[in-house]
Image (cartoon, one colour):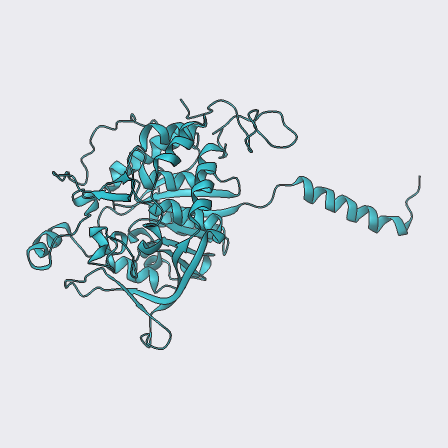
Length: 405
């Protein structure tokens, strides 16, 4: 049958529409920079939130010392990837030490400036919340534990067979951003040493991204938590490497979103959430049920989920943000200004999150952990024309795939 010119355009439009409907939507690209203490806990669960999302492609994970030392974090993260079916994700080792701050300097300053509640790799402090009818209460262990930067205690979850890539974190970050110009979001949920070094090596690095998501900073949290009640501008990620945080905050990002202490302390990890996750049979849910028994605030998870769904944040403040690098009692504290009072040069406007829709966040996080996700067989596909698991949950489900139990 001959094709007449008048029929070609409608036919072409139909074919293009059909092709668009069949092709998957382009995934959002993200690079994770994390202090991956473990097993389980906020760092690992936050990475899982991004790994589990079907709308996201994680290009890689870069490790930095923060809550724990880099080498120990790297092994915990590699093992998490194995156990949850995400073993295709490259992991690169980054900075072991902050740019300027040292553990020795911090110890010497304590008699003059007072103690810091959470020292991360330099000595664990408050690590849990105890749930009571009146709310949650932070718990400080009687004996703080620490070890050297290259000592690795036995991993309770077992040693990984995966290895980190040979490339260092900083050059990996730069290479990935240049390979995907203006398409990659940087998710930085630990001290910002790796990101600062990338900016110093490649001055165009920040401007070539889609923006950066930071877990850090504190404005004026309303809390009785002793870590923040009398030090409302203190926050660990900024404090651990203040010079790096300053470099990052002053860089030429298209957009900066900051998940502050103010909003994080409103989102505790509850027993109800854990119970809901533990009922599922996904590798991610089984990992959390086994290794995330402690309670604390969902610091990094909220930063990840708010990037996935910005409507979870119900209040933000547009402020100019910086970090105190004076090496005095407020060294590492968050500094902010309004437009009227900001310094003449250097500081940039950020979106500082201040409040959230807690029930929706809790539900979305539990859904992510109990829904099959990931590109490496986190759940084996099942025959379904509507994209649902055999038990009715959305996604591609089945038994544990590569890296699962």
